[in-house]
Length: 402
Image (cartoon, rainbow, N blue to C red):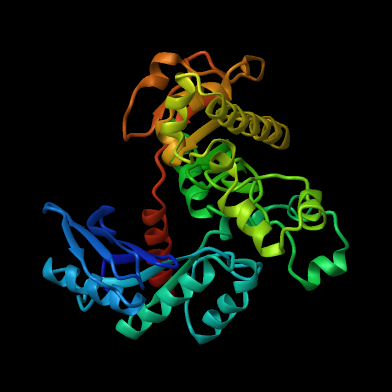
């Protein structure tokens, strides 16, 4: 068993790598950073060591291998390099784990091949995640590489919640079902909400609202996910920054047959040119709220559409759970946009849901309750920490394996 107490968390995107080096004894960040525009001439690496000034490097990173080698050099300059014996594992965010990967998994050739087999259901994410794993394995072949899957927390959904009502044989052949995403965030926040309330997660029913540029909701009963808004892909569910969320499937046929759009054009439309961006030309909620306050009708419509969908999911998951103890807002919009929280919960007093305006207006990086004392359902703002969740799962697996 490794005696190391540190985990490097890597989140590899198609042209970027986010990373954090975490000391597991106290959960502190020893370093964090981002490499972006990989494969482009104007690449950038931003590295922030604990207790030191941020360092920015502008150079070309031809591929992920070059990017991770530069990350290793930055860490080494801080005395916490990849060759350190204190490094216990490298934890990788992998978006899609399908039905097989429902827990953190030690990566070997067979596991990597299965993640690659899932590329058709996560073509935007899994290829980059695979690249990150391959490069990290090449840099430290002796170190455990742990994959933590966005879909894993949602694997507990009952079959009736995970199934689409289409021909079962067709669905099974092509692995068409609801998988859900943002699982590490939903898992972390549901547990952190219980801690905030001084309750055992096993006795708490929570609706988690992860509202960032990508957005999803989950119904968590006793620490176990029983439903979530995203489905086969991260496109289903809430209105998002550039994704449509729920649409009538017939829209696709109509746009193809009547509008003459190709399948790839429709894919691009729904994933990259819809949501808030499609409704008003902006996908930044701060800008949308500013424009709305100034009387911009398109921005107001985008805000109202966003909130309307959110309220539908709150009500739907209230019905799914039967009893709701807490609602937790998290991620960029959820943690920082007080007007979204206020609008999403307005008029729900009969469900025991209300928000105190003064508490809601407080800006803080800490987990906090924003509902009045008399509220039957606790409404909270709970900052997410997906990197820490990945690190904790990876570290636990390494020590269990030892």
